[in-house]
Length: 113
Length: 114
Image 1: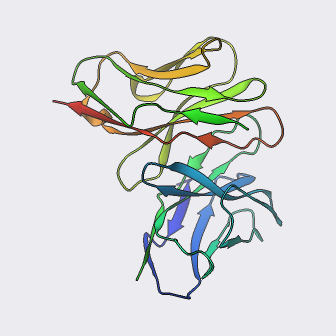
Image 2: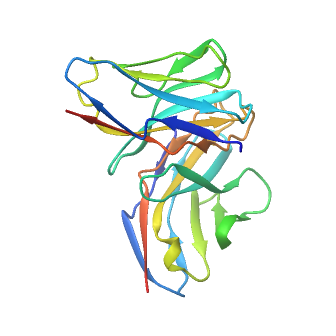
C-alpha cells in the first residue's frame, strides 16, 4: 500500500524533554511538510522540505527541528524550547511539482504531562 | 502574503438538502485552490482542486466547487447532503509566485442532520 505513516499516534512529553515524531512516505514524493493543528486555527506550517538534505522554516518553526536525510523520511523533533507543544501534528507530502496536491498522514497527538 | 478566509465556523444542513461551505482567498497572481476534508482524529483527505480552465470543478464524493475570480471565492457545494458528509472542511490556496507554499483556512465544521 502506498501512503504516509506517522508514529506514534499519541505521544506524551515531560517538561524539558525533546520528543521526535516520525513521518515516512512510500509515494516517491520529493516534497514533505509538517503542520501543527490547533482548534480554531486551522493548519500552520512548521517546516517543509523540497528535496533531500534541504529544508526550510515555515510560519511557526521556533522550538522545532527537522532532518531530511532520506527521501522517504522527515522526522520532526519538538524541543524543550517549544513551550506550548500540545497539538495535533500532521505530516504531508507532495510530488513537488505544481499544482501541489498534498497527501496527509493520520497525525500524531502530542500531550504534555 | 496569501490568505484564506472561511467565514463560518460551522454549517448545519438537513440530510438531502444542498450544502455550501464558503471560502474566499487573497493571493498574488493566479491562484491554485484546494478543498480538503478531515474526519475526527484523522489526517486531511484531498477533495478537489482548481488550477485553470472551467470554473466549476468536480471532485470526490459528489462535491464540486465554483471558482469566482471577481469575488475571489471558491465555495464548496453538494446538491444533496449525506450524514456521512459531516466533517471538518478546509479550503487552501497557493500560487505560482515564489515557493508554492499552501495556506489553509481555519476550517468549517459541517453537520448534516438526519
